[in-house]
Length: 255
Image 1 (cartoon, rainbow, N blue to C red):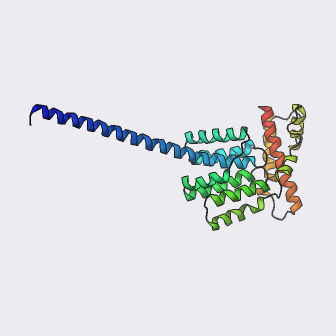
Image 2 (image 1 turned 180 degrees about the horizontal axis):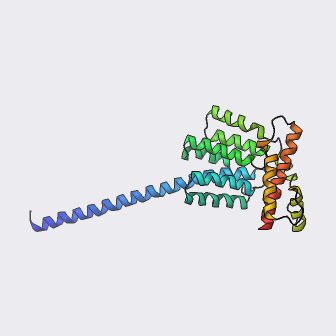
Image 3 (image 1 turned 90 degrees about the vertical axis):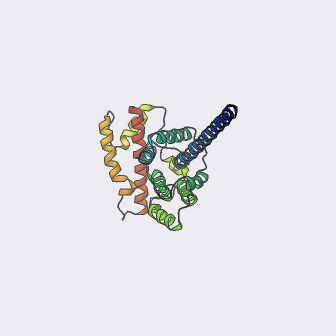
């Protein structure tokens, strides 16, 4: 083999090596982009469903968001958690119209069955947290667990477990419970909230938190005696709603 042919073969080999490196780099980039996009859709599924459930009774509360935050912190990385919360807060602030049913279908693709089981429970807990599950929330939740492709047995078990947390109320009735909390007169709002918590004007933040904890133990739907009549249970749930809303408003006022 003469020297010219040798260098020609080396040149061809070098070009092939470069082409192979470029191909592998492009392929790896495409895989990474697809992986990122898939993960983004995965996070979006949770954000949309959780935000939609929070908004179904007309507004989202800090307490509901805290329930979601706890789950997110335990089941996603820190970076993923920040992205989920950012999306959720954006949806909530814009009061977005969300299609949780569609994203529940996508969740069946991006989450394992066990993850979907756990998510189903947390979605019901979010809806229930501030005083029971209203009709609009209940319909959405049942649609979500069906679209997440849970087995009929699991769907029945979940529905049976949370059935007694339903309030039989619609969104309009829920909103009536909170008339007056958003008055422009901050002093009157603060005094009303303190009164709901059984406190006098001038109560400290420590007093507020202590009273709130006591009332939650007394009126939270999960802690109510089983032998209560339907009317007694409904009154207790309404009381809990007002306590929760008053507490959140006081935290907002006190900064």
